[in-house]
Image (cartoon, rainbow, N blue to C red):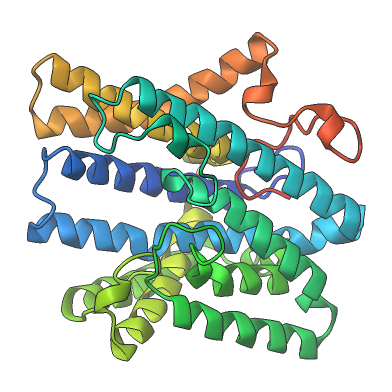
Length: 366
């Protein structure tokens, strides 16, 4: 089968959509495993679990941070700093508050069945994010600061902004304190680098890579990643803070960077095969919906299987993963058909244009 460049739809960079798809799939897989560990269906101390968990968390959120940064420059230049930040921040603040209540409410109602029960008062504690939802306020903070800094406007600004974010990321590397602000600080460097480069330059560079060049890049990067991961002790970006060392942080940052390179190279190769591009691109273009709703789907699938007496690890992995991807996509389709889009996007009056941003289905699109 000869690879061909799959035509872009509506000006979208399909390599970026595919990379989003790969990253959100890795995130769902990681949360499936962690849910099974919390439910004592998997031994969270086993070597296989620890290795898989560490591997996934070494790269998947770094990929999303990088991709989110890519579109900041275009958004600011196209809409102006004020309108861009208003639109983007209103969207993510609204979704953070809404889904904190949705996810928290579900946990309260099923407190006797979930891994980590909470109280009604916990729902209103928005300073301490519920599960994976911390990424939304993190996007608000990092986007605001980087958009104001405009690292793309000059070489000096770019270098200073990048070095500042690099120092902050290394200082916070491995932190997972569950507080808005510090949570995710280790990912700043990837977001900043993406914003500095910008999506136009990224497309310009990747468009020159044939599938053979991309395959060589992937194999080299993947070899370094797997060898380094196998023989070195590393700290991932978002956990392991208490046990980290300067060496484990440096190696963790290096392997996270190589992991991002692997995903981007793989996405470039996949984007040359039409069928695979449509599959991964579809998932990636709807990464926002999946990110918002997959937590509820994973918990629900695990609870139903357990109540039915199913203890098979394979069944929990397959059903949980399928629910984590399928339920959010079904929810998005129903929300559109039933015209209840407020589940997945803010009402028009919160946005500067007064219009819905229904096309924003991706977690990282500007």
